[in-house]
Image 1: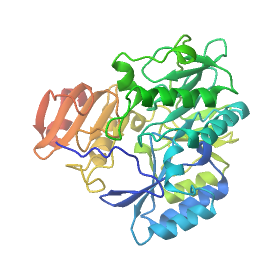
Image 2 (image 1 turned 60 degrees about the vertical axis):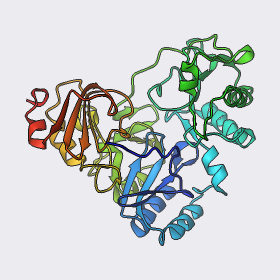
Image 3 (image 1 turned 90 degrees about the vertical axis):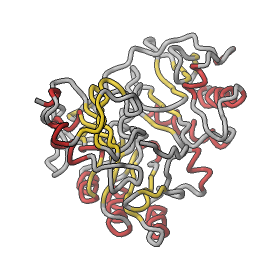
Length: 378
């Protein structure tokens, strides 16, 4: 099935039209939300949207079902909470993901990087940065273009996505070095017709040189964490990364929140697993291994509903396997390969084994009954 490539991500000041209304993406400063902000977002989502809230793969919060008429009132409420940038350019540049396990030093580094971004040249809408400076990288599967990580000896590494190694930098010099890497990306022809990402440029064989040359490897990546107790509090998950506004309000009442790119939220300081409807606290919950986009009718490009089928198949997955149910071949919910990917088309469901939604299918035009009867689910 064909799909439209937008080339940009929704924001709060520049929402994106979907099948259930406007999607308004909130970019919490450094990925953190205070209890008051959580309660305010929940109230605004009910008053000005349809009450559904998504967690994006970029550690942002999305309010769904907003209309052109209700959008100004939503922005007013979010502005009062300190969650709206002064203008669209500032919002679009502030595309920084911070590890949810950040300490004071990491937050200071991320703040300095954000403060430097207005000096950067104009970048494509999806171009982003990651500050993943714990003992070892955790967000290696999270899309970004420039990464700040730690080497095994604790040295800070500035790495272009697509390269195995990065340049050693100091905390004080890191923001300036990151801007220099941006300049290299732009000067090397990384942008075409307003679009471009770092990894494809690196794949062409281009490499930064001099002080930006990749000479130091980051520490071996740690596995993605699951729900449960962590040093900073409690991680909780959500099926398909979506919750009701009431759920966000209930979590905000427990403490400050850190938004992750993994369909999870970290509740700071909490030492007990919360018992809240719709919240996943079991790392072995089968829904954690299933990815499904909004689907029809919520997405205008989807050929079918996705999440009812995904839920019905979750408990049938073999141990350790992942399932991706996509409303079209764009594959928004899971950009990487899954053990099995189901792609909706006007003719039925296509099946891709160990690939992404855009790959050639092994089987085509199946009904949902035929999907359920596949050997992978029996």
